[in-house]
Image (tube, rainbow, N blue to C red; front, side, top):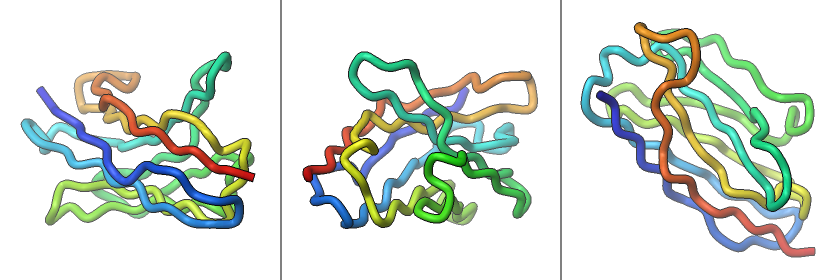
Length: 119
């Protein structure tokens, strides 16, 4: 089992920045990919970014490319989502998720952290 805990959300003005953290615990050796998703009120969950847990390959959704970056620190078992030039439409609950060696889809999810961007 893998446990994920997000932190770093909050209220920020448009144009501002936030860095979200996702701390992983438990069987972290089984993690293959870490991803970030978001869900705005009344909308479906949306993919934001992913990173290989033991590599450098990353993928960023077009909607946030150039503004968001994903990184990880394996020594801390933590993934990060750096969000710059935030817009009101970035307002959502942000979730981190882990895809393990034993699955073809994300099988562990955090509880989410709220990000609110005011105009």
